[in-house]
Amino acid sequence: MSDSQQAHSDRAATVSVPRCWLWVWTALLAAPWVLLAVTLGPQWVRQTAQNWRIGKYHREDAIRRCRPGPWGELEYTRIVIEPPEQFIALPFDPDKKVRWVLHGYTPERLGQLWAEAKLGVTEQQTLMASARWENGIGTVVLEPPRELIFNLSPTARARIYQALSEFSENHLQVYPFRFRADQVDEWFRDSDTSERTEKLIRQMLYQRGTAVLFSDLDTLLPMLETARERSRALKTLSRISTLLLKLRVRPNTDLDTVARYWGRGRRSKDIAPLLGSLPKRPEGYTIDAAHLLPSFARRRLYTYPDPDTDPDALRRDCHWTSMNFFNEVPDDRFLSHENTREVIMRDYYPVLGDPLFGDLIFLMRPNAEAVHSCVYVADNIVFTKNGPQPYVPWTLMELSDVRATYSTTDPSIEMRVFRYKHW
Picture (cartoon, rainbow, N blue to C red):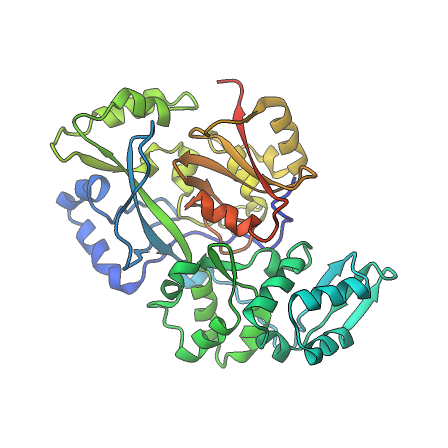
């Protein structure tokens, strides 16, 4: 099973905060504010050896509430996180040609793709002129000019890139930069990218479900004049929209039910004392849901792997993440997709009803290929790492957003839920 196919590399460590929120860190240095930050404040901050500080709030978003359920009273706010500049790798080669690879395409099928993308006659002729057939007629390699790529319509880009995303050679189409379509302005806000760069990026955006995507780094970078602007553009594109999730505990909250829910995986003895220790106040207390996650997820939430200190960081994909969710010490057998498949078949069973905390959610093709996996948390929220590309952290996301990212334009992909059978 694959995370579509492995590509790119996971990148590293700290999560930075836009300058407008630097006062938050200063305030948190004062001891009286620490408790408020953990239990009440909307700016929960944590620090580990390599990771510190999450991002800023979407300004237009209010606190949202999840559906009632055994997980308790949950509320969340959207935040934006981004990697620091020192962990931005700049894959820039001004002479590198854009290369598209399509397997199993005849000239007729290629022409059908151009027609579905509603390309003009001149665009089709230009693309066909760049085509080189390999392995007889089976594989076609195209080297489209950057001017044509830049001027593709969003509809044409979405259709062509969906076809390209089926093949691992097209890394940026398989693993595009992505952001929520209804928050696209937040992608660029306070980013320090120039107005010109933002316009260039927006010209090449396309939509898939609830996400807006960008796959044309090789076209964009040669159009930018300075290394600083190229670095700033890549940092901005690497921003991720995620969720800051909190549990509100009131005097009348059924703590036994909530503790049983979050204590799955034989963790109730850890969760119950934590919930019971909160002071009883009429309006209740909030606790960051990160404290309710197993240590594996808690340590990684909002962070990036560091390939400089971990030789296998580039292989720690969504399946490795999902299978290790409850493990105190990560099991690197799950770096092997074949081993992961065997463990699922042996130790898990399919769930037909509602998922529970810690259940594995797989997005699968009819041939049982898993294109993505994540871990169910509560309501519509999952713990996920969306691919092995360099700038994707471990995050909380809405399951509907994850499904839309992977399956909106591929109706054959289905969601399947699996539960560990030995608890």
